[in-house]
Length: 485
Image: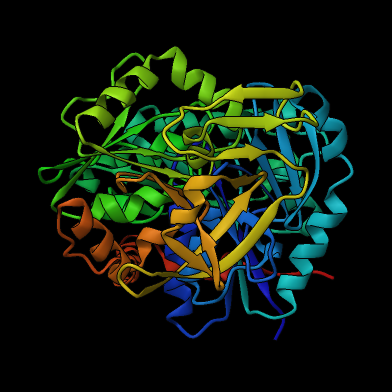
């Protein structure tokens, strides 16, 4: 059977494309189809690790899970990981290609279509349906030349498009009709239908809006998707979706670093009814009543450490420790907790060394080789097994590593202060393991009552049912076209 493909593009950023693709992947997989997600180009510092040691966007890993298959690097062949306001690391088919300034990326992008199509066709060789996710909006016609993310890819691969508008932000008629207006006629002709997402209230109240969009564009309406209230239970990819989650009396404070990365570590904690996860925005102090301050991962540890200090959070953190509060640093946050971060080769910028926060007696040296791996670990204090992943530059060592509190593949991992209240490690995803999370939180003075992974599965099932109730899935499937060689 020849694979077919359909592409979900958005009339703007953050219209819910990733969630829709995940829901469609689960819905069609449950119909017996071999489904694969695909995003030609993604931009995110919330990466996932594949079994072959590559990096892809976390949204594509969630979509693969929704399709009931393991994530592969071909599902997201180009991943941009911002390192500064003007530059990003370029990951191609799971491996770092280069770091490039934003103004220079267009030249690099022009060379990547062959790699994108190579990955697309490899996926197509082993499935029935590929659900493709666009990036941003095709209405950004200033980016159309050498585009690999939206219409450029759709044209090269011969994939039909469904355009999604976000009614929650307002102006959805203009979003969709305006996109038709600015697109070249050949690109507009690739759009076979449209859908409205994030509707609140009675969808019949928008019947006139559907008619207006259809009259102005000639596109088929595929349905109106009401707001999916449980979306927060699924791992988020966009840093803009990281938000405080009110809960019980155990307060976890998380400073929002400018280049925060792999923040899915927070998701299992946020689902616990006894825990409040509070994202601390710049300009606000770390709360004095926090039980735990969690320093998350960072794409640029030294720059984010400077930003942390500029907010006065280093002073707040010292006060928190004096009050007996707990501190956990993960990956970049672990590096910040040490005495020094050395970057002799200038991997993150100017060569040199900076003083760390000094809460752990360890030092970190940045090195060019990046560790990217899925890891099996054990928590010796409880005997609980867990799985996670590592994505980091640098090597950390020092006296406090003698109090390693994890073992990864049989080797000691992490460091802890003498009283055990300050801990750090390189392992991401550790809190997804229910047994470990329960043991760690118990030692921290609170309880765990959530089965996290089964909750994610239940939410994906609910999402698929939600889309099946409100979108014309048969029509969407009929619009998918055979992948051409």
